[in-house]
Length: 394
Image 1 (cartoon, helix red, strand yellow):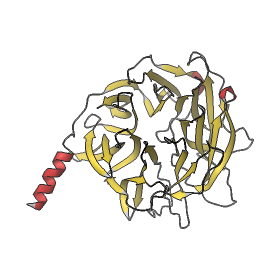
Image 2 (cartoon, helix red, strand yellow):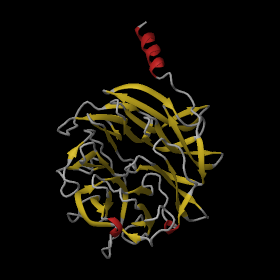
Image 3 (cartoon, helix red, strand yellow):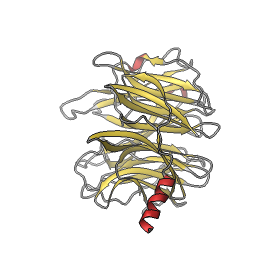
């Protein structure tokens, strides 16, 4: 009876498992990303294949309620950029109204066959015209930069984190975590190293909390090739950063690249992290609310053992909303679906399917609207075509 009661309770908690209507916005696409400006307006971008070997960034604007207010726009200086679901291209608007688009162009070389450089372009007329692309790192003979993230800072400028092939210590493993910020029309200036020996192929996460602290989370490499999540924080708008702090005590020993980064979110009361690990101590996506001291060694919560690539947002009601792809079999065929997982005080409140059944759906992103709805976008492969979908939930 006890086992049956648990099954019934689980069914009630997960009873919202249903297909939710969705809106298609583009085809031949990868790598969706969402940003919000200082007024709450939403920018949704993706990488779209325009010929056999080339991608370009396209985007659409929505108002602060998540209502579409523009046609699809193309950023031509990005033509030829790399398309990558985990290290996706990104658009963001500063408080001064300047649009920045950050993207990567692959330039392999004998020392780095996966090498490439991060570029950016700017628009001061809301996307009507774009400046010539320029490198984020202008130092000569730098081999590679990748796995970047952007956020709007308290001074209205844009902050960026990325992984760089320049090493802090000779012969150390991995990459180096860097930070930079914009200075208006001067673009990104004064990049600085934050941490060394980072996992070179997992997306970084940069997040500004309600107190205007800047948090950067990333996968680190420690002795024995342990690849767990760590973070640093700046309380002075990026002038200096703290020492490294470990987020998840997973002890994931891996001589390879997971290609899955962390996500941070917070409200006025708490900050949380979500991440994937394949450790023997527990395999899957884990969630953890962080303490005021920003330590996070214990009490992580398993969300799913069959998911990957989580992204998270927090709402004002102390709830955290996580989206990820979850894998399942149907008639011996493997599919992936987008799941929205809502948590409060380390407890699951609701878990529901967002994407269409029997598709391969992945790399969802999420934000909130002015009226507290959730705005979610993702990629689904349907009949061999990769499409961008979005949906408002709530």
